[in-house]
Image (cartoon, rainbow, N blue to C red; front, side, top):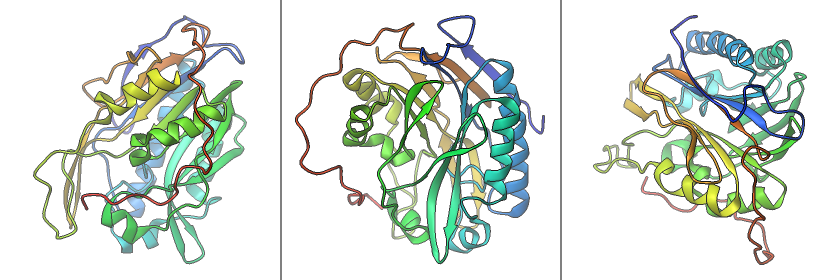
Length: 307
């Protein structure tokens, strides 16, 4: 291991769910890591390979990494342009190989380059190593993200993992109820949410916020599991990122929540892979509440933020 990894494991059954009966998820709970250089990308990818193999040893069927895992989150426009990769670039290829060798899905967030455009993207890689979806973040948070990236134009995907419908949201998007509704109505039973939520953030005038960023795991995620009968895995960063623009301390509140609004796997105190079994058969789901048909899909543009 390039750094020690503590495993916190909780499952409804000793064996991993059979096809169509559930999904055993490992949400990477990342400690302080390198950021903003090619060396950082290489170190983060080495850890990805090691953690993916560790997750497979625990019978996991999917592993989720935090937002912009390859480069670190707090990169500036210059670093973004230097380090962003094509959707079939070397980082995605490394993750594809790790998925295929270990027989589990890999959810890899990375900065994407497409011509002159850049996106805060997530590559969803199936257990056979094929890319099932490449999702570009549609709801960008704050001035910094909007300087670096263009808005994605396609709403979040629903893919199949182990016979279970799985939706994907990217960080700030985990706070929009309409996106959970959108995914649930398209068959998602599990939502995976890579994120990079810190305690404080830099405002448009360069000053740091005085009020800590809200902890989504204490309100919106609990509500959405209950209302839409979803399992939600939230994979945040932990520790510090030190960059010329300042210091970011991440909340480290990763976990997996069941439709009862209780954590299937609570956040561990240190760097760890958090694993849990998201199983509709082990935790039977009542019918979802009916909702009026929307005349238009949820908005793609992000509303204004404090930044």
